[in-house]
Length: 193
Figure 1: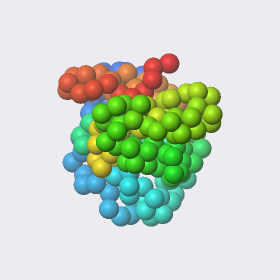
Figure 2: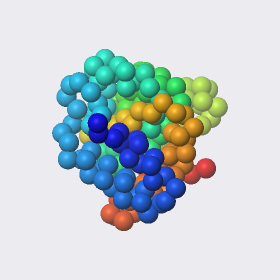
Figure 3: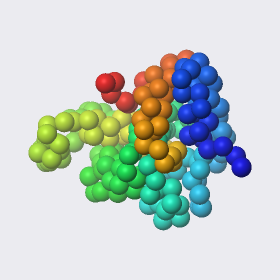
């Protein structure tokens, strides 16, 4: 049986050079595979607007915890984790009316030209009230709009052991930053702790 993408990365988590090679290999496989159209999502990029259908067709994966990657074209943009399930975590990205992707799509032109000021005041006020004044999610929507929301995708790397997911996330973010930097791509959207 073929080893999961998560395990390919996790088995070298203690060595950043080997992790960089493993990450490059996983991305290479991810980018050479076609975008998800149906069935399992393993090692497939799923366009954000296909997320609900993917959730229905691969419900087992979406009910798992794990690591996820957001990107545009062949550019990784963000690495995140969920300790619960991808279905619950993706409320912030896709499922809700004011999710990052829906906001990026709705206000794409204004966000591309004006950044966070491209949101109408009622959206900024709603986020301020509901997220303690944080603009992180709005900033994410701006970045998705600037990258071209029609080309935003995600990839899921399910894994059952939450402690291992956290360890891999911590080790992978700087490696992924280096991968982008080596190719002249922009920084990840991850806010460093």
